[in-house]
Length: 417
Image (cartoon, rainbow, N blue to C red; front, side, top):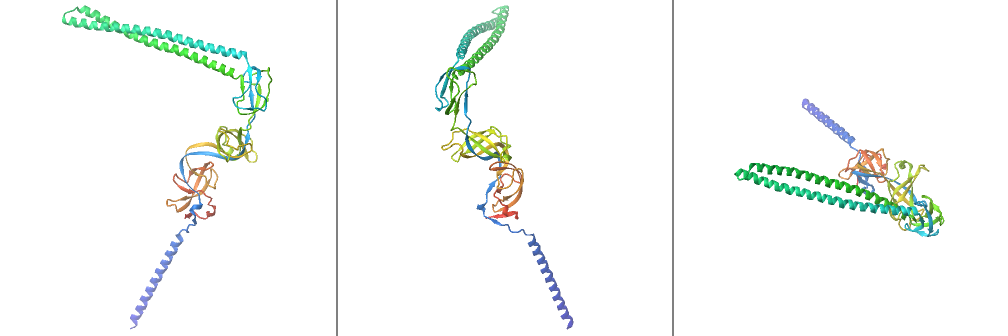
């Protein structure tokens, strides 16, 4: 009876060992699985983050700066040509428009030169008409001669065909047929020559008329220039403003370029912007700009860039290309945006609230579900006011978070709710 009892105890021990090993394996497996699990991503309110989609296409590089409206320089009106002051029509302090005549100059030599230029132009026009009539007549004569020869050739060809046919039937002389055929061939050659002569005559006539027309246009341009110089003896303000000073007296002789008057333009302003020195290196004269006066946006272009740096910024003058809105006055605070360059085909996205141009930053990229965002390393290129170039790390169509996510630096994944 002792042998069966020991066998049962041994079996129970074996089962206990097996259960213990199975439990240990299960515990180890669970432990390994748990250790490999990623930490649960933190939740972020989707409405509190700024998202944008990566695009490919043209990107406009811009820089922005604050500034104010300042008056443009006083307009100095010079003498357009030599002359003598005949009349002064206004006094200092008068309001003037661009077409307002300030004074009248006289120049007899200029008046005579204008008349001479006009008569030379009219003579050239008359010569052109005469030459055209003469060439047209010659061309008509040539056409008539060509038509006569053509008619003679046609008649000779018909006679030759008739004589050849009669000779074949024995009703005419074969010699006569040869004579008429030779005559027709000679007239055919002459017809070709006359046609060529007519073409040459037409080309020659056209060349002569073109030469005459060019001379007429040259003299007309000279006459218009002289006429404009004569009209400029009525000195105009050139811009709206207030006449500040008249620098000459009646009867005074002036040379071309002599200052005659000064006009102040209190309503004609320019924008003077302060651009950070790190961005001003790309600003050049002629670039387009937009000035926000808080009462409308005015287009303009860069007219001057200060060569010096003052307190970390460069002064840039922008000329306004449109009328000022109501309420615009000197010293009005404005904000200006200058267009640097239009990049034709680049990958770009809205400018994030962190990171500098030409640097590498971590940006959260949103997956297709729109619920999970993972951090990726993105290399930034050139930056504009509202967008930045993507050199690597993102592709067109990717949706990214541009808000400042520094509080989530410890996580590479976040959950959007």
